[in-house]
Amino acid sequence: MGKLYPPSPTQWTDFQRDFTSGLIWCTYRHSYPPIKPSTFTTDVGWGCMLRSGQGLLANALAIQFMGRGWNRPVPGDPMWDIYVRILSWFLDDMNARSPFSVHRIALLGKQLGKNIGEWFGPSTTSQVTKALVHNYPESGLGVYVTTDGVIYKDQVEEAATLKKSSGFGHLLILVTIRLGIDKLNPIYNDAIKSTFEFPQTLGIAGGRPSSSYYFVGYQGDDLFYLDPHHSRCVVESKDLNDYTAEDFSTYHCETIRKIDINAIDPSMLLAFYCRDRADFDAFCLKVQELNARPGMGSSIFTIGEKAPDYDDDDDGRLLSVADEEDDDLELIL
Image (cartoon, rainbow, N blue to C red; front, side, top):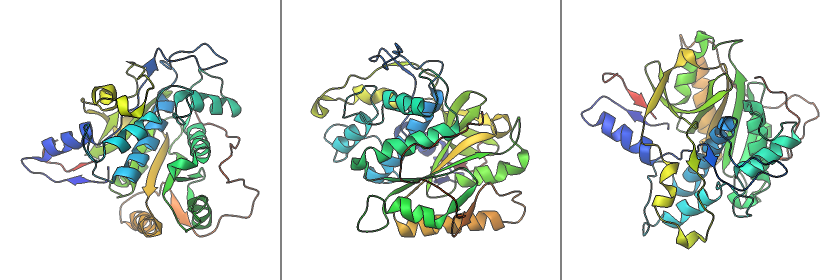
């Protein structure tokens, strides 16, 4: 994500390596403990947006702890223990070692009026992600959510310093937007694709109506995506030292899928990761350059200095939300 693959003899193999080994893939799971008080032991049929949201967060944490350009480690590698710890946070259990499990996501959604087993939209997903991270300070991550198409610097400052007495810290930015009524307005196509070129990008959770994908790059008018609609058996929760590479093999996708941008739903969740203040400043500059680019069409979001003076609770607690329900080309991942 955020990486350009120019035409070359190794273009596709380089892209394939990073797609299959440098991205965390979160999918439907089955045979996990019930999400009480319900009897659900699988999220097949309703959890695709939950899993896409997990993917955004998991890849943010992978970049935070292992750096951009990381590739799947194996036992004995310096990054193996960190990799295992990150993935253990997303295992499907109410175990305290899995703060970002589908169980915790579904239960937080219940506080927002979403029944366990009900599909999430981008707004619910963004608010739940923010609450999950707020409840687990060990992640060392701040989360900023905007739903009005404007990223306000004063609110970002607050979110980025929430857990850092030393100043601006690691930050996940979530932008929920709707770019059309029943279908995506093509005037936004170029701007959407351009966000994948940002060094800070984490991709986009979106897809078709009531069917979410996790978009991670593009070529021409095709978007590459990770598809959460594949059911896998739950990975057993155990001591971190007991995991093998095979245990986490289903968290990486071997099949590269793509969809025409004109076929996606207009409601989506864009995500960006900023390591520090300088990275955020660079992100703001990229947004401003994108919006000023000749022939770009309409802006999909903007940067503002100060939020309007209204009552807002941005301390990480849940807020009520209203959900809207080719070889000669460069590759971007």
